[in-house]
Length: 473
Image (cartoon, rainbow, N blue to C red; front, side, top):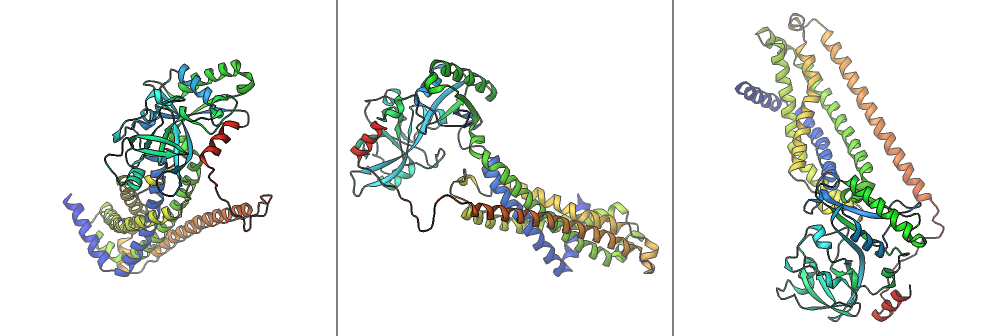
């Protein structure tokens, strides 16, 4: 350990004597390492981190399937049959996104909400911070109208008043008694302000097995049950329902997929390709720094020869040069952490609004550990070739300054590194060109109408009109 510390101090002195070289190398590495860490923070937040629910690995989504669609929304009556017949789940709940018209307190406004079955919150493993969840009897037609609000809505609309329980919210013309407040940051698929029981939705859509009114089913696997086992059981239940109700369910099956896979499956390939492209950028940066180190090793070959003549072994010289490379890389990694912090914030400002798990994207301990690991690996990677080449110097010839073999050896290795850099740059250039071409083709697709100067808007119907529309659909 004492010998290693001496190597580190000597490396710092040597690098301090060449501030120009050190600055260029550190900045090059900081950009490469920082860019990788920034993209890894996105990959980590979206793909790798567990979902923010207790035992989230047990949560699954259950869909109906048809010959045309592998995953489609569920008929409410089918959900109730699944709930009664399945044994693979400790709980199963249904949820539907729903916008409500809020009145009764100033100007009317539209708020985002969801209708859920009574056991939705127990399936998700969340308990209200105030009040309670829905009771089973409240998830039936004709029950007393109740609502659970989110923490953000509680603070924004009620000022965080502790006596909010029991107050009334007039939603779509119907007063609903507030019975609970959810924890902060709880979210499922998209933001919401208020939750109402599904069973109280007075719509013919729930009573018709042939309609699929945008219902999503989430379930929690029972202890000891695997995803495959649950899928097999639900496939059997789906076949039974298709036989019982051929008019509405013929050709329909059931698809069971983990909640995390359901959320990120469409993004996995794109994010991993982007991560790989940024990895190429880091390799190019390593090639640049390796070339700088080779040129520097060529200039220091008399130093290495003298140290060898004084008794330093080849392994000792290699270790010293590797130490210098790792020190350079760690300093670049420290600066790269700032690049990663800035890059992550910049990425969050440009990602599309529909990207799942945006709130989970940040530079956490796992990202810092990744940055430290690639800093060490990068330092060893770009310093290895110069270290081996520098330690191979012929002592007699180098001390006499009469040999050109070292320079020729360095030249061959430098040319190989340059060829590698050009090849990787070409791969990135071709990939970027193909991406631009794809975007060009997408922009050129004829949508079948003229989109110029066309606006879209939502119109909120009066509560009595909206309820009547639900009944006749």
